[in-house]
Amino acid sequence: MGVSTSDPDQGVALVTVDFPPVNALPVKGWYALADAVRAAGRDPAVRCVVLAAEGRGFNAGVDIKEMQRDPGHGALIGANRGCFEAFAAVYECEVPVVAAVQGFCLGGGIGLVGNADAIVAADDATFGLPELDRGALGAATHLARLVPQHLMRALYYTSRTVTAAELHAHGSVWQVVPPARLRAAALELAAEIARKDGSLIRLAKAAINGIDPVDVRRSYRFEQGFTFEANLSGVADRVRDTFGRKDTP
Image (cartoon, rainbow, N blue to C red):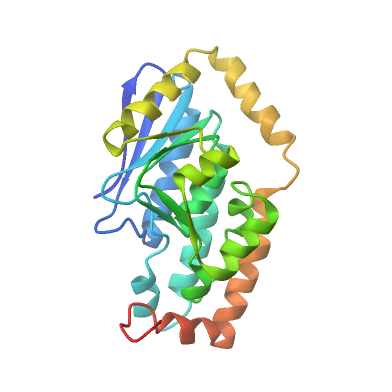
C-alpha cells in the first residue's frame, strides 16, 4: 500500500498509487504522490512519467473519514495542501505525464488527470466531481481542462460523471482501451514520447505550460478558499455527515 515508482521501459518512470479499498488518499498519500512525481521528473534518465493506480478505481479523492476523525481543521488543511502539491507536481513535472485511468476517477482524481499531459483510459472509466455531495468545492479548474465550459458547470452542479468514451469524443482522452490493455497502452504512448531527445522534451513541456491560458495553480488555490469557507461556516460538516448514509438521496 502506498506510492511506488518503477522503470518498466527505457526513459519511462511508472508511478503507481495503491491505497485500498478505493484509492481515497490520506494527507500523507497526496504528499507521497507529489514527491514521487517530482523525483521522477528530476531524473535525467526519465523522459516520460506514467501515473497509474492499482485496484478497481484510479482515484476517489481525499479520505473523508480522515477528516471526520479530526475534531479541528488539521486534516482539512492537510488535504488542501496535499492536493495542491500533488496536482502541481503533475503539472510542473519536468517531463510529460501520461495518466492511465480505470474505473472511477473522482474529486482529486480529476485534479491529477486534468493536469496530466495525456490520458489513456479503460472503457470502464468514469470521471466526475462529486464535491457538492461531499461538503467540498474545488477542481473545477481541472475539469475545465477536460470538457467545454458549460458542460463543466453542469457536471459540477449535478455531481454527474462522464465516461471515457465521452471524454474521447471531446478530445481530452487520447485512447480508450479494454481494462486488460490499459497499462500496456499507457506505457506504449509513454515509450513513444520517451524516444524523443530528453533535453528537447523538457523544453517542450516548459514551453507548453508557458502558453496555458489559465494558471492552474492560482485558480485551484482560489477555489480552495471557498472550500475552507464552507468548512468554517458549518455547511461542509452538514453535508459531509450525510456521506454514506443509506437514507441520503
